[in-house]
Length: 285
Image (cartoon, rainbow, N blue to C red):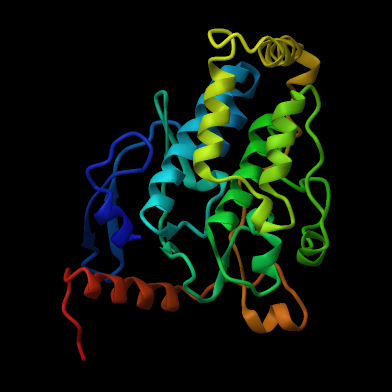
């Protein structure tokens, strides 16, 4: 996380800024000081504001996320834990945060993340890639369109995701939106779009009236009119909290479990190694 925050510390707008770190005197736990986000994470924002969350605002939000993702990918990094709880909202800005698992593309390591956002090839033991981040982006598209946690109506089963299970199509959603969303979570990583392509498509949709894209403009206008129907904007009474789930390679090769948690001690040791690499603290060895 610190490596990426350190690399992008001058970028404002799409990636949460990190100002520095400190340590609690008593416990020795690290404290990371970042920009303030008055609305919290995007899931909280959606849950509290879904009835007023217009389609144009949704598209702008997604474009912000895609632009942050493009910055990360163009620098050769993969986020590896992109989900709606790691997207923060401050005023009218949307920013990617929590780079705790971010590594260079092709790097291996323990699988960790929020299960509904994990690409099937990762659950099958494959490597993280730009395409696995795009899969996560597709799930974010679902949650932004529906206001619901993915797979909220069923038990989360990694094997089902591997075999092709995906969230359902949100009602009153433009066809072009659904097509892009489903291309992001295609089972074949090679068929998923790039962050740059996502930005281009979202920009066309946002400015469809000015660009004379009549069919697209009308489809989003229709969706906006449907959105204003109070019966269609009710969100199921579900928790906005999502439990981070860690799955080890050994569990994937035998009995997949969505409930194992990464030990706090191991997370701390990883952070210490990063701090040493950044020359923020000295190695004890």
